[in-house]
Image 1 (cartoon, rainbow, N blue to C red):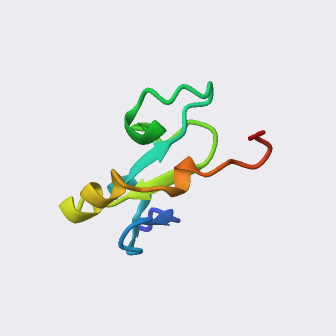
Image 2: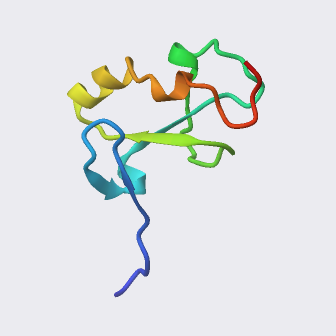
Length: 80
């Protein structure tokens, strides 16, 4: 039986595409609290608003994501 459309996303580290449910989504906290590692928090339900980054389950990708710098750049609309 056809289940319809399956959303796919790309790992920001290795650039492989996979079904969204197989990837882990990370987002910046909305209140500007950078208490999470690197200022990012895991979005387990994949429903938080805002920019999200997806990472696959590969250990090398997870390790490299800890050094991921794109989230630290100034976001659109933020003052310096």
